[in-house]
Length: 242
Image 1 (spheres, rainbow, N blue to C red):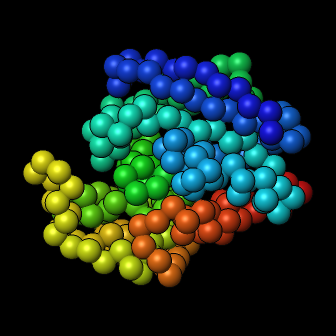
Image 2 (image 1 turned 90 degrees about the vertical axis):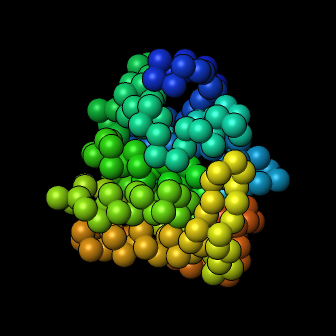
C-alpha cells in the first residue's frame, strides 16, 4: 500500500500532527475516503492493527483512500476528543481542505467515512453534528457516549431535523462498568454499553440509518480489530466499486 506522510499544523488546535495517506489500488479512480482518528491506536500492530484488516479486505470492500490522523499525545486526545469544537473545526475545515489540496481529488469522492474508537468514536459523532454533510457515514467503535452525562446523546435527541449521515455503532456486552473515575474530576456515571445504547436510540428516534452491533467482549483492541471487518463492509461495500 503506497503511503504518504505529511505534517498538518492546525490553527484551530494550536498544534500539529502527522497524517498518513494510503492510496487505493486503483489510484485516483477510487471514489471512497475513510478517515481514521486515533492513528496510533488503529495503526499499531499490537492494538487494532487496521492496516492488516484493510489488506485482508482488499477485493471484499470497495477500493478506497485511507487516511489516518494522529492524536498527537494521550493528553491532547483527552482534551480534544470529548465534543471539543476546535477539533470539529480542525476536521471540517482544515483536514479535508488539506487533503483536497494536491492529495485527493474530492470531485471524484462520493462517500466520506469518519472512523473513531472510544473517545474518538464520540468525537466522530460530534463532527457529524457540527459539520453535517462533511461525512456520509460514521463508524464509532465503543464510543464514549457516557461522557458528560450523555450530553451528545441529548444533543442528537433534540435535533430539529435529521443530519444526512448514517452510523455504525458497536460496543462490548462486558463494557458494563459504572461510576468509573478517569482521573481528575471526570467520572463515568453510566457504562459504555448503556451510553452507546442511548445514542443508538436517539439516532433511531431521528430516523437515522444505524447499524448496531453488540459483541462478546470488553473495551478491547482485539475485539475492535474483529468488528472493523463488519464496519468496513457496511461503510464501503463492494457494490460501490461497480
